[in-house]
Image (cartoon, rainbow, N blue to C red; front, side):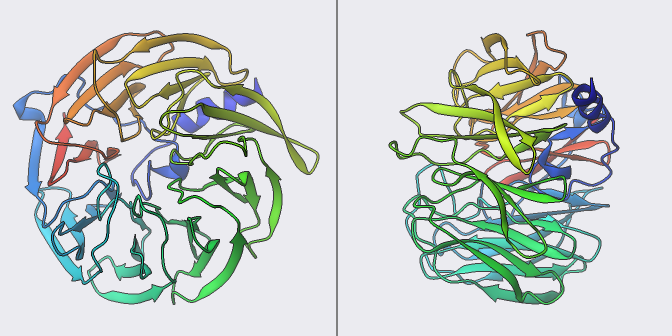
Length: 398
């Protein structure tokens, strides 16, 4: 009952801002009511972007922030959009080296993070990992270079903010670490070395004043945000099979839930619970598990929306699978599901936003076609859903 109460309370929290990948602590939940079946009148505005990309938008007040890139020159452009009318308020271009990336990736697949003072962007090349901080008015406050990024699939890690720190998962094929920068100055506060062996895309979350990271070789790790010290680590993913953590960890009451896998191999969702000073495995699911999309917890249910559109619903507390159904006849999903007013929304790669019930019963409620390639995760704030396609930003509202 304690677990259920915590989860239900989290779903009712107001979501005035959407400050990082999948909103508050990455839970992907908003109380805002978004249209289920869209009409032309529900498209408040759509804005062509000064570049392409797959990173998600973030929202603070009436401003939306996202990262774009020129796929020919690889220059990155940081962008601020007016949430009320879609006008581009400011944008600034940063020269960056062109490099190879996976065909499903882009030069702008990272999601920024924002608070009342600044917005923080990250991008990586084989030459340099960069984090840049801008004021909300568009002035560059600082820019920090953090060394090369090694990994043939290209960069995609997203920063988060916690108690004056900008925190980034820098697990990669080369020299790896978990990094925290001073949000005011960009100076490194701590750097925790890792032996990750694989470029990782998962975004950390906060659990009981600990930072939680997922990675193939390290498994699920708890970090002290004050100094970067490892508090616990459960190597719950098999070491004999090369895997990659792409979906992000989530928190459900007293559970930490993380995922890992590989496209053509076994994939895993594992739930841990504190036991003394350590964490013990509570349950695990390894059938129809997503590789890229992050799981979504709504009330007593966890929804696993896999890359081919098969959705599995299980009990959050026990991992008992209740059903697995196709959300759409055929398709690919590179973004993660989010929930608005108890309904689940997820973007198919062609731009079809699929809507399901979120009460534990399977039913497809709608398909809404944006008509443009979409690999991103929607943001929800101001009573609207902001969806970033490859080259356009949409605002959908009642």
